[in-house]
Picture 1: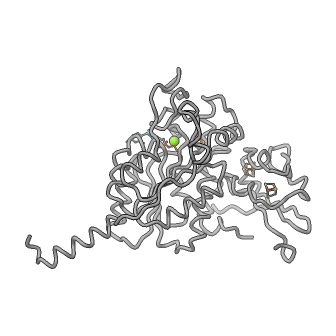
Picture 2: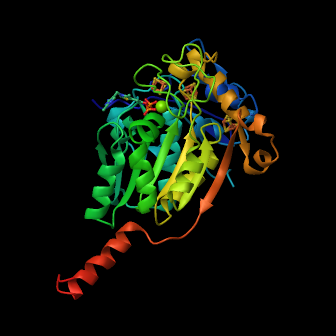
Picture 3: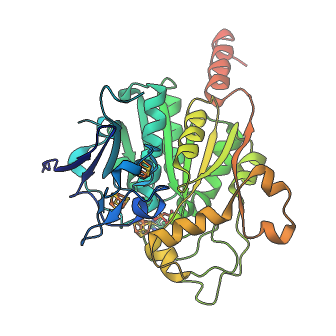
Length: 80
Length: 275
Ligand SMILES: Cc1ncc(C[n+]2csc(CCOP(=O)(O)OP(=O)(O)O)c2C)c(N)n1
Ligand code: SF4
Ligand code: SF4
Ligand code: SF4
Ligand SMILES: [Mg+2]
């Protein structure tokens, strides 16, 4: 059965962080190893980019997520 | 929004079956990003695996795939490559799959220098079957079959592959997925038998038995045990026992098996089949 893609999107005018909640298994890896403490866990242990303004778009949360549940993009027109 | 990953996976199979924080998913991501960098045609890629949690990778990628039997991914892959040398053949194995039951196939695939890329997800344990120690479990670490600590010495896959005749040998970790993806990319692009070992985490079997309760604990440990080749060279023999050198260890050119096979066929035909 094909799952509907439910994305929770957070953005400021530089960066857009999307969390695919039904794929996230709350492992905590993205939260712990973010170099700028951008992410905090919600009550289910899934990441919320509370400090999105500190994000340096290093992409490490996305690369280390074992479940392809978090992605980081530059915002169009504002990115390099 | 479609990500790089979305273009290469069988989305209907997700979320995948692996436990929270399991390194298999991180390695899968690194493999996909490496292939995306190479811009290879998905239909010219064959991914082959054996049995184990890691071997389930072939169910998730939208290439031609084959999930075979425990320890025998390399023989199946060899057959595929010999039948159609134009295909890009990737073999994903667990540490048990590759170095225990499949150890013999591994050394001979290297000796023949068959043009395949072997990616070994080394979580240092039999994850799928409940944490039995493997030939890559470090001495002193615990497994369900080593409740007082493993007394064996483990293989060093890098040394093993190098001695057996591989063309490309590298090691990365799930803590450093960017480096792992770039090592995998070089291995994929290499003619001949290429090997990339990725040190990975199995929080459920290995972690639980070795005082690392969470995926985060396991990744911190992997960060700590992995050192660059340069740092590695400066370590004492005792210090080396606790660490793994990461990076590229071998990159050499030697005629691969399919090329030599083609030559011998030509020679036989020229002689009209009479020797
Ligand atoms: C011929 C055969 N022997 C034993 C097994 C049982 N078995 C399944 S997976 C596995 C080992 C898995 O360990 P590894 O290859 O390291 O993969 P992981 O699950 O850790 O990714 C074993 C022994 C089997 N399936 N087939
Ligand atoms: S891209 Fe880097 S800085 Fe931004 S949230 Fe992810 S890990 Fe943190
Ligand atoms: S790394 Fe991925 S699966 Fe783990 S908590 Fe973060 S988004 Fe969820
Ligand atoms: S048992 Fe270990 S290797 Fe298997 S899916 Fe779970 S964490 Fe991964
Ligand atoms: Mg294993």
